[in-house]
Length: 176
Image (cartoon, rainbow, N blue to C red; front, top):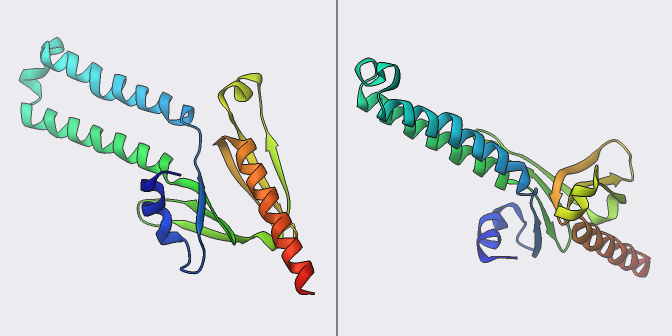
């Protein structure tokens, strides 16, 4: 785990828990949106404006066009930030499901004792080659399942969660 993840996501972990692993969604999820925003929202309008296609310079003042480009850049930053903050934070005590939003975030804490099973789903051979897949956690009370869609390195996530659940159950059996 890199230092940035450790510093950035530690505020969602309780003081007595240790942050072990941060599970992000796969980068291929964001690449297409970045290219679409850059091409259609930044490059094409800039090309038409600076080449004075359709007499855009006489219709739109330069300051307004620059304001448009700043808004497009902020939209791009929001898209990347939203992708980066849709994570599972795995601690030594459980999983924190973080679904970030600008105005409100949805944070769910899952204890290892309440996990019944874990499932990995890959839709195609390309998912296997790229190392991505949907990781679902099934809870014992079966009221809800938690899924990290298009997760990066799903096998590593599943292996860690299975080991942590086994340790938690082993520790609970020793306490009884």
